[in-house]
Image 1: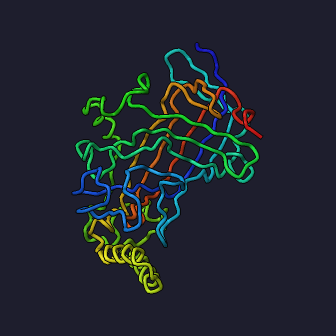
Image 2: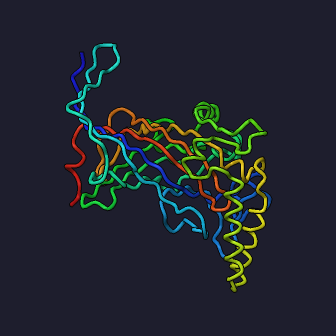
Image 3: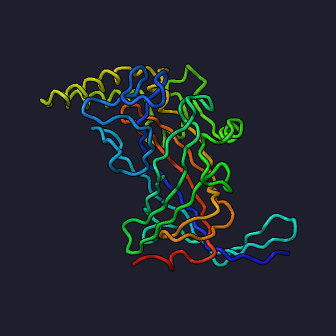
Length: 322
């Protein structure tokens, strides 16, 4: 029988909008402005860069009337437990006291959830998986407290091979990558007669119940803005957005992708994690269930929702900076 292990555990639920300014088929992945696909860098905007942004910053381009980028912890629970291993049997986790909710007043409530180190969607130009999703590389997740006197930053990563954390995806055999990506599923409506294609769940969570109507409202807002705009560069950008938003057929991918749902189960498995920049042994992989979707081709944003379970051999809140 193994020694019991006492852990401090946090189940963190998070959601919000992210941005990825990327080209779309048939443009190549590294196209900088957008030519033949349906996403574009507009006049006056910097080039497309493929980088996934979970938080606002210099890379984010906030277009008018579009969702604001930002993903944060919206709830969850915390508990202390003892894990007991009985020989070859599965470990058994026993609560110590009652779990408590992560709500207003808890340092983790409202914490910013981020993917750091400039991750991109890497699909090897659709050779691994279609629709530009692929792997997220690198996948370094960071949880940072916000609006709290207790400052705490936790970071842990996912690797295809956690024993080789420095390995580039370009060095990983493609068959091994395919094995991973098969765990990621893309959901789109197969019922072409449905007026609202795609995942009902993501449409509800992202407040986009009718993609065509959503795009029509955005177009009306931009037409009003254009009537009051005098700058030629800004006018050109608005005219391009309006022209794209006129394409609102539910079966067109500009609308249909708003109902896409991509499951990305990247359990954080790196052998080291950091707490306030100090390395520690995090033990077994931290389970992560995350889905992305609701792709808004005008804002270049998508909706994210997920749950992460973190586990520590010590009380992380005792390490907060005050």
